[in-house]
Structure formats: structure tokens, C-alpha cells
Length: 386
Ligand SMILES: *Cc1c(COP(=O)(O)O)cnc(C)c1O
Image 1 (spheres, rainbow, N blue to C red):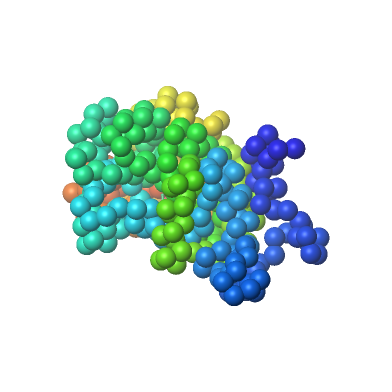
Image 2 (cartoon, helix red, strand yellow):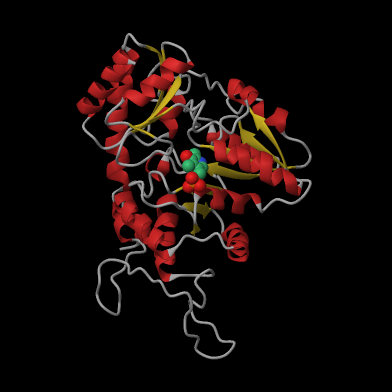
């Protein structure tokens, strides 16, 4: 049976995971070898040196490429290493247009690192129909955005933006960390590069720092591979193994966590201590209709809400939950709570925070795999007692 006929969750388990031909092991071995015997001097086998290629890494890259529908994938030591590799496609003088609500670390990379090598960035309101047009210059080479934005969970019109950006000759790259390929497959919408912080949902258990780039076309994959091999930010074998293991349950986790998130979002919406709830699955979300169209059957497991009260009360709320851990990161089996203004978006300056709608009283939840009712009771006691 050809792999592309198989359903998502079957591919998550089987693509890249052939039984080991030598031992029959059904699980991909963790290949720690850094160097591989060559057939002869100047003759190259499939693997020669582990930065350039590693069998455990190759296995998980095959799974990732299949899940995102790309021609190939590259696994990195972190999401930021993956993002940096994509940015190294650009040269001095080039310009990037990025979404206004990109991940804090991507904001910092663009403003503090890429800028020093002459690559400039404009953050654009990609929710407005002429947002991209207004931000591009003759030097613009790339559009960088998130499939579901952070922390206001905006869902841009990715198919339309991709068409528009391609007409302008831009590379379109999407950070698909929040949506995961379970809910959104940007390559099917024409996007050139998909990036993941695999540290989040793909790994899924808060124990595997890693990142991914998936390319739609071979020529792009080759360019990215050249940069990855030249700069060396590859994922280590143990992380590749953990990531591959996480992928096997990705669809089940994301669907279940999304279901719980919808229940909790509805609960928070009617809570007397809550001013507003931001969740794409709620009719009240400005992008609800588009999210229903672009996301595959669920709305993700991230919720942002505004508590009643000021910065200090918000700090007390996020400190008062017992099941929700007070921590940055997201996407794992355990639920997390955080205050974007002082945590995930602290690298934004105050003006950028205001522009991206990151109020002091905003709280972000990453919904895990716990029982929905237990999570609701935990939030309720924190909101009442803080
Ligand atoms: C965490 C995260 C990143 C960065 O990934 P790391 O694995 O922490 O380097 C990038 N984008 C988004 C949306 C993230 O949540």
C-alpha cells in the first residue's frame, strides 16, 4: 500500500518506522554513532558523519515530511535553530514581513540577531486585507507568520496571503507550532516552508527540545539542508527518538486536548471573574469562521483570557493553580498557565506588546490531557481566591 493513501495517524506510526532489518526491532534504534564506515576513500555511503545525516534523525524526518505533506523535513536542536536556519536563506539588505503576533523568540531573533547581519523586518497586521501590501518593499524576500498566532490566537487567511506573497516573489514560511499538522497543513495551501517548535505538541511530553523545517519543494529542501549542515544546529539522536515516539500519538493528543480546551473556553466565557476569552473555537472570536474553514475539525488547545483585575491580581491567579503549572512552553500532556506580558512575550518591548494586544491581565493556558472537570475546578478556585 502506498504511504500517501494511508491516513494521518497510520502514517504517524508507520512512515519512517520500518522494523530494523538487522534485528527485527519494531522501534527505531537510537543511533549514537557520530561517524560511519565508508566503502572506500572518497566513496560515500548513505551516512558518513552524524551532523550531515543520522539514521534516527532520518527516520523522524521521514515521518515529519509525511505528516506535513512536504518533500522532506529537517530536524533541529530547537525551534529557534530551525527558524534561524530559515532566516539564513536571506542576505544582507533583504527584508522580512512578519506577523504582528509572532513568538517572542522569533521577534528577538529578527530584531536582535538577523538585524546585525543586515536583514530588516517589519511586523505587519496580516489580519487586515492590505496589511501585507503596505509592509512589503522592493527588498522584501520572505513572509513569516504563524498558522495560529500567539497569544491572541489569530488565524490569518493563509491561502490568500500565500497567493499574494507568491505574486510578489516572496518565500512563504509558516510557524505551525500551535496548530500542528493535525489541524493545519500549510504546504497543502501552497506555503514553501513549515517550521515547528517540536518541543511543543510534536514531542508532546515536555522532555524533548527540538525543531523542524519542512519544505514543499526539493530545491528549497536542498538549500535548507546545506545551511543546516554548514551551521550544525541538528537534533541529537535521543531527541529524534523521543520526537518520533511523540508523533505516534500526536493526532490523539491534539484532538483530545482541543476538545477539553473548547469545554474550558466555554466555561471561562461565563465565569464572573473573567473579562473576555480568546479561543478560535468560540463564536465570539473574530476569526472563528476562518478558523472553522482552515483548521481540520478542531480549534487547538491554547486558550487566552483576560481576568478581571490588574497586573498584580493576574500574577496572583497564575500562581494559585494547583494542576496548571506556572511555566512557559505549551503543547504537552500537562496543562500550563502563564502571563504573556511578563513571561512568553517579555522580549517584546512595551509598544510592540500594546500593538499586538498583549494586556497585563492576559493569561494563556495550554490545555493538557487531564480530565476537563479537574482543570475547570482548578481554574475556578484560582480565579475566586486570588
Ligand atoms: C516555543 C516556540 C518557538 C521556539 O521553539 P524552541 O523549541 O523553544 O526553540 C517558536 N515558535 C513558537 C510558536 C513556539 O511556541
